[in-house]
Length: 163
Image (cartoon, rainbow, N blue to C red; front, top):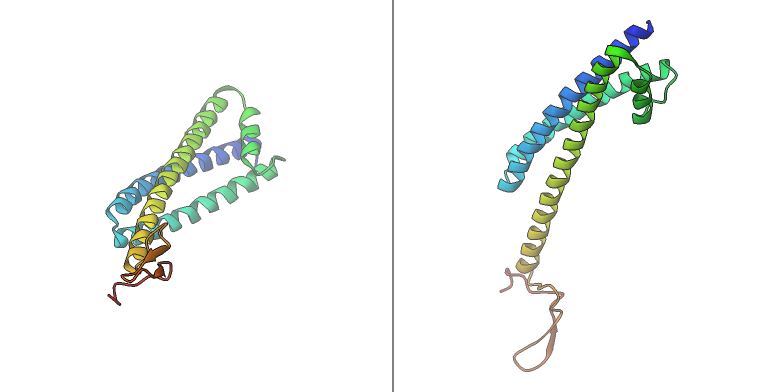
């Protein structure tokens, strides 16, 4: 494979990765809505789609890394940036635009994933609080007094099932 063919193949892989990441951004946005609505069925479906998509992205990345190695570059983001920096003329502009679109899509994925992670953490905290109430535990209130003045440790709690 000639250098020109390597460049074209890497550019094609960058475009494919960018397209896949844009699809992932859409899935993460749908996941955001499903998390807010606590739609377990939708979350399960989206998780399957995200898994398939990340496997496809991994395959594209492996192909790109193999080509970078053939060109004597590190199979990392730095190696890819070094590849782009070595180009010149119209090919530099085209590949550079595609690389920039890939970087932006990756950043958007990370941002949306962080937002979804925050929603998951908030939902988890809400569920843990509800469960502690159901088990008769109150946060920060470990010692209470009974009707005759004796102390009770509320860490053990009284579940609603006992009430």
